[in-house]
Length: 329
Ligand SMILES: Cc1cc2nc3c(=O)[nH]c(=O)nc-3n(C[C@H](O)[C@H](O)[C@H](O)COP(=O)(O)OP(=O)(O)OC[C@H]3O[C@@H](n4cnc5c(N)ncnc54)[C@H](O)[C@@H]3O)c2cc1C
Image (cartoon, rainbow, N blue to C red; front, side, top):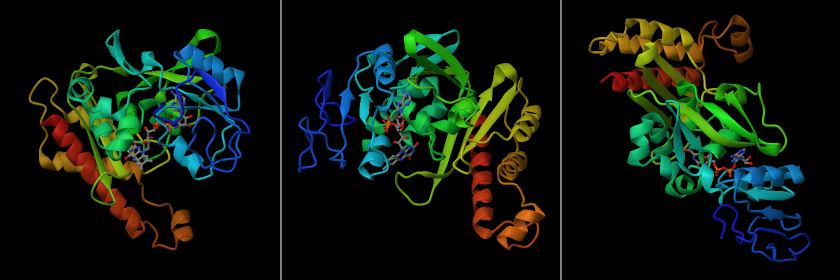
């Protein structure tokens, strides 16, 4: 069985018109879209998957299915076909290349949360461990997290702070590489038939942290998240804030300031008041004071934030202060 979409692992088959009145296709499809015609393809390589998508432009790729099948079951999406990525072994692990790790898009959160991966990219492992309940972590993948591009995607601020790039597989065996920020900002979209194949992450060999605030206890989506990575070779601290905007935000001025006060050749620790100032700097950069025009729209006092937004800003400040403190500890 394919874990992601609950279909048999036959190579390619069609269930058009076979759904009948039971809501299940002959192949045991369990979506709640009984009238939809489904072509389900389970390729064994990235290039085969790209070819399948190119051959059927209305089909969509499915990896763990945690986001996609939820949308199908909610009636938000009726894909004419699915290209399952679960059998593509080449994207389920990672390899090393020129001081970077080339992470397969099919890596699950559960796999990234394990100690060997945590030794390599600690902040991404921490984000993976925080991503939803165990069922989601077992099925959900890195590539799905990126392609979904939800503001609450836990991997996204980490990849932004690491300045990761995406290796995209296209028709005819082509590969192109783009910074993750360009995809998340909508400046460079996936073209028809393209798939995220790998994520290139520089190996910094230095502490890095990811912290997340949620609205309730137990596994749940972020209200705000902060990733902090140290890059001793460039003598820089990089930071990204997740969940407070449609894409992760980089507070560049705060990064530059704190990078200039760290003693890179010495102990690298910072006193509590500097950590707190960093937290406030990051929070104010990501959640700025309203302009007079915004205040007029919100009906709030000029220059003051609504209480809920002020609370969010304090949350970000606390996360950023703690994340930097832990990275420098
Ligand atoms: C109950 C619940 C709780 C969750 N909690 C969290 C959480 O705390 N943190 C968090 O970050 N996420 C959370 N998620 C979201 C989800 O688990 C992740 O975003 C997951 O990483 C998606 O991966 P997937 O493999 O399941 O993607 P899928 O559902 O298979 O696909 C998602 C989208 O990405 C596309 N896609 C998948 N792989 C590729 C690829 N290689 N190239 C191009 N496009 C691709 C699909 O076509 C689809 O549009 C939660 C989801 C649920 C249902």
